[in-house]
Amino acid sequence: DRNISPAPIRQLDEAAINRIAAGEVVERPASAVKELVENAIDAGAARIAVDIAEGGKVLIRVTDDGHGIAEADLPLALARHATSKIDGTDLLNIHSFGFRGEALPSLGAVGRLTVTSRAAGAAAAAAISVEGGAIAPPRPAALTRGTVVELRDLFYATPARLKFLRSTRAEAQAIADTIRRLAMAEPGIGFTLRDLRDGDARTVLRLDAETGDLFDAMRARLSRILGAEFAENAIPLEAEREGVRLTGYAALPTYARGSSQAQYLFVNGRPVRDKLLSGALRAAYMDVLPSGRYPAAVLFVDLPPVEVDVNVHPAKAEVRFRDAGTVRGLIVSGLRHALAAEGHRASSTVSG
Ligand code: ADP
Ligand code: MG
Image (cartoon, rainbow, N blue to C red; front, side):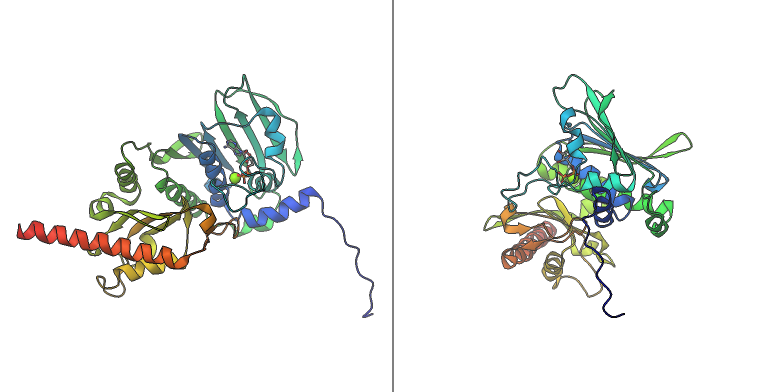
C-alpha cells in the first residue's frame, strides 16, 4: 500500500480561495478595521467613522466621505485581485495603502459584508452584499456621499477562528489601538470610534481633524493620542538625506519609559514594526539613556516608493529598505542633532 495512487489535483473554487486568503488578511476584528480604514484613507476621506459591536465580532461599520465607488464597479470591488490603485505595470511605485485587491473579497468570505457607496458626482448610491461567497447584484441605496462598509458576524462561517478571538474588551482595545496608530500619520483626517451596545452608542475615540502647519497638526494629534505630557516633552524632528526624509516627534531623555511600547514607526505613512528603525532609535539615545529605559518617539520615514518594499506580507507590518544604511544613518544623526540642539537650548536658557 505504499504505492497508493495520487489524489487528483483540483482547481479550488473562488469561495474556497477567498476563505484561505482571508486567513492571512483577517486575523481578528482589528485587522478588518485596519483594511477598511486604510481603504477610506486611500479614498481621500476627510472624516472616517468606525462603529463596532461586541469588539467587532458582531459588527464593524466604517463610514467615510471619500470619492466612493461607481455602481458599475461594485461587483469588482468584491472580486479577488481587482483594484483601482495600481494597473500592475509598476509594482515598485505604490503610493496607496492598498494594491492587492484582497481585503474586501477576504472579508466577504469570513463575514456578512455589505458595501454601500455613492461615487463623487453620481446621481444615486448603490449597495452590494456578499454572504458565504455569493455576491448579490447591486441594488439602489440611500447615501449622500462616500462609502459605508458593514461587516457583520465576522468568522461566523469559521467557528475555529471565532474560538481564537480574545474577549470583547480585548478585541475592542485592539481596534482602538489600530485606529490610533493610523490616525497618528493622518492628523488632517477626523476619526471617531463608537461602541454600540444595547441600542446605545458610546464614543470611545474622537479625534477631530487638526489644522495648521504639518508640525502643529502633528503635535496636536499626538497630544490627543499619547497625552499632553508626551507632546510637552517631545521635540520636532526634521532631517533629510539622499531623498529619505525623517519627521516626527521624539521625547526628551527625561521622559523615557520602562518599555518600548511608546515607539511608533511609520514608513510612507504605514505603521510598521521594524528592527532597523527601532535599532536606530535605540542607538541615537544610547549615550543619554540608562539601560532599561526606552525613548518615546513617533518617527515618520518617507522615501520614494521604489526605495522600499512594502510588498512583504498583507497583514505583517514589515518593510525592506533598498538602502538600509542611509535610513539608519538619517535616524541616528537626525535624532542626535535634535536632542543636542534641545540640550543646548535648555542649557543656554538656564545660563542666560
Ligand atoms: P485594495 O485596497 O488593495 O485595492 P480592497 O479589496 O481593499 O483592495 O478594495 C478593492 C477596491 O474597492 C479598491 O481598489 C477601491 O477601488 C474600492 N474601495 C474599497 N473601499 C473603498 C472606499 N472606502 N472608498 C472608495 N473605494 C473603495
Ligand atoms: Mg484595501
